[in-house]
Image (cartoon, rainbow, N blue to C red; front, side, top):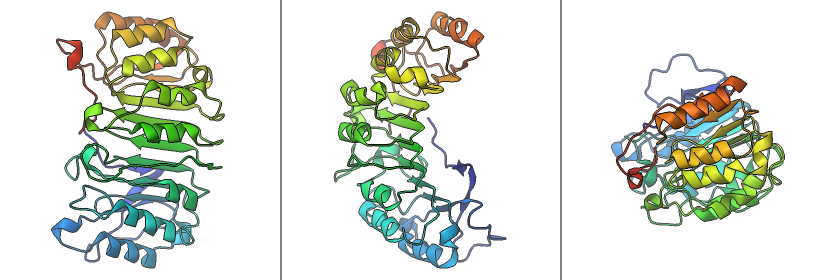
Length: 323
């Protein structure tokens, strides 16, 4: 799976904050774009710290609505700052970034850093420092191959967060449990990429049970439990999950979904109320794909069955994003 740079965040086009010697053209108003700060320290030029300080000094930070941090702020341990330093900068700037509504950490492509090598740290202080944040996305965890604890989250209450995305080649079980234990009364969209055990995934169905129960997420309307080696088991659990009845969209793609999981979905609670069911990147047979179409498309469900993968044996199935 190709992971590209973000082009939009929070409905705003992503705009690269220019380097000091770059011909950047007209500078957009601070609140009209999602600003991306990205510097690869290992190849000369200014460091990310210098880039960050220059951004704070030249942009009207009180009007910044969306921020994307890329290479230099994050990456492997060899070519990026310590994630604790990056988190510290964000926390320290909270009194200046008073209008921040959306934040995305580690917008890196495969060429800049493989997903499993992106080192993350404790994101709890960032969420606590921005209580009015509406959207928060994190790519990578660092729990697979890099030294250190990797991605961490302590359960907290956040009044305003509407979108939470954790894109991982290997999601730690303790992070999934922390998400499930958070008090997020406004959360409308939750997207978790679980990944593969080889790349650090320790998340189990039991860790996801409070999310599927739905009591702690009263506003949830869009759920993604994707990119998993246990996609069939997740589909079977979703088939009877109370949260599904109030969802508008369900994303179970990018993983190892087979006919077994799809049959469980079809034999469970009705899914015809959904606006969208995304199963992109799957291992379904043609007859099962047809069964899904016949069951859901007449009811108006937008069904994504693109990227059908084929293997000789079940054990050859693979997630779309691991490395």
